Image (cartoon, rainbow, N blue to C red; front, side, top):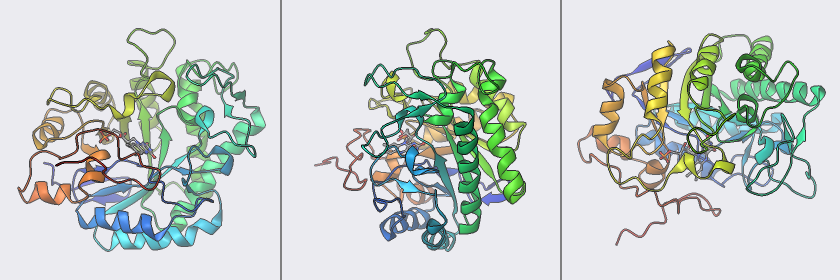
Length: 362
Ligand SMILES: Cc1cc2nc3c(=O)[nH]c(=O)nc-3n(C[C@H](O)[C@H](O)[C@H](O)COP(=O)(O)O)c2cc1C
């Protein structure tokens, strides 16, 4: 099943493997994507990754979360992205750009000292309190996301993935912990998801309804089980249902916000049971929606990958760190040359000089 094609939106993906969005620290300081990023994506496409999701690209320079992060906030980025997209398409892979605003995890700088968020909830990890967005600011962000999707289409991308995970702006909106608003974008589950529907509506107005929109969705904020008024199941299932009913063509299931600890890229993955650590969430979501579900988080062995697809946990397998370590992992699995990724989940690949595997295997 791992090597069966799958179709959604208007795209056909040659197999079930996804490169999960991975910030590379390889863009120019203004966010322009570089040949180095193109080299990396081409290597992944040559290594038979069916669907490549780019590193997170900010829709507004004031929503940047890291150095050397890609941007998609200006039309000047369309041409460099077009070159990268065509390099990937030459090898038969599909490529989608992940679009993001940093929200309360935006990088604070002298030029950008104020963090925008749905509500002024202090981040207990760093003591920083963001500012509650005004209605005008919310409307501007909706416009920014829609313009980013327009640029993505013009650059030839196969779709966009809205980053609604990991504590960035859109995941701030869906969580009752970070969204305490009382207007049309806060309160009930539906209202907390409303900004996403508004973005989708504006994308449709700008470029029609044929351009695939995917979502990377937080299933949980990642606080200790039972912590009240935070995002978790079953509410994430309700949100997934709302998205699937409103033109989202595939949902990647992840979890964790920075304040709650390093949930999204766990380091201790020793056994098959440690793998696929969001599997229970993705199963619940898959049972409730009729669009493909993509599972990410700690998937390392062919056996678990097959178990996830055959056991009804997910339709696609998404990998981040294993593909930094072995960009040709998918090809090697297909050829029967390996059954388990070499990645030891040490996280040394988060390297500000450009992601690479820095583990010493000797
Ligand atoms: C270096 C690094 C950069 C990442 N950048 C992003 C990103 O830009 N967008 C995103 O949604 N997730 C990002 N993630 C999270 C991964 O996409 C993925 O959800 C997580 O690493 C778990 O998958 P894995 O066990 O296969 O690595 C990043 C993770 C790492 C290690």
